[in-house]
Amino acid sequence: MGAGFTRERDPADWCAVWAVFFLALVWWRLGIPSRIYFDEIHYVPAARKLLDGLRVNPEHPMLGKEVIAAAIALFGDQPLAWRGPSAVGGAIGLFAFARLVWFATGRRAVTFAAMFLVATDFAWFIQSRIAMLDMVMAMFGMIGLWLAVSAVRLPHQGRWRLALAGISLGLAIAAKWSIAPAAMLPGLVFLGWKVKDLGWRGLYQRAGGPVPGIALPEAALWLGLVPLAVYWLTFWPAFHWAKNPVNPWDPIGWHVYMLHLQDSVTRLHPYRSQWYQWVGNWRAIWYLYEPVDGPAHRGVLLIGNPFTMLAGLPALTWCLWAGAVRRRWDMLGFAALYVLSLAMWALSGKPIQFYYHYLLPGTFLMVCLALALDDLWRRRTDELRWIAPLSLLTSAAMFAWFYPIISAAPLCCGRPSYIQWMWLDSWR
Image: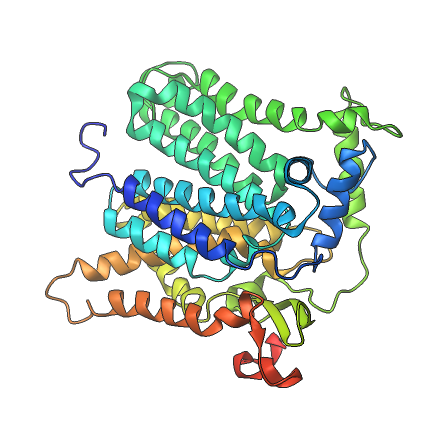
């Protein structure tokens, strides 16, 4: 570790063990349902056509579909191949997320708590078991943010870490645009830090800033131009579609077309929702509920953990206060990631939105909760210390209780089998 970073031992080994355990849990019965369900209807056929060189699903970037197509080419056209990239991406992304938290906070307890809270927040687990674009995005996004923050903590390795961060962030955006606000934050922090240390001289001098020795123009290369170049290179198969290929020299025109396609979807969907409903965790999505792979009904209900998603909101306020008043930059940073990721959807003109768009804000919210719980725990004479372990136990209990309805397990009692989990009418 860099000098003065932390006296605590790096928990990388334990984080890796937990990530493998998470992968094993995700992989169990990953092939059920044995047919396409929910939004797999868009991405699995798109991956199949991509292998044939056909134009498909042009309203979304390419990388997520390319990864699914590669899995099909390697392992055959079967459910484990469709969903394998999400499962592996969820596990690697969870490990990278833990590394991000470690390098941002230097606290083992916060790292373990945040990792546990995300693994049990429902959304990360559910999205790791379905062939959609989200976990490819989340994996590369967390790797990119981890490398960017670690460049600050390990400035002697700063150059190559920033370069790899730029590549990873470009790949994340190439999977799904939802990561874009978070991907912009490292560059904005670099700019603000340089100007804070050196004034306007920070625009060109190597001294000062988060990574001494790296001037702002070089940082703009690694965190700005490299991600854009990597992103556009992932469209390479689209440049060679048999019909109506993408013009590689007209990225602006193609993206105007992509935005037009996304905004043209105006037909109301029964599971549509708005950002404030995600925050309150009161609008769910049924990915699956029907008899499949046997006579029993199986269900996959996307909601957030009923405890942690609400407990995270006062923790978010705590982090905003601590960041502004106590200058806890780790708290302020994760609160900013939450706000920026959510603001994208609150300000978006996209007419149809869904709860799965809350994946990234909800993930950063879990770090805010872990930081707030750590603050409570470190008050050794405070009567409220018990809240920290009780919160983790409650999160685990909620995950265990809802596990059948988020994992496509066979449910009993026929059609009413889902009622015991319908705590709100809006979840139906």
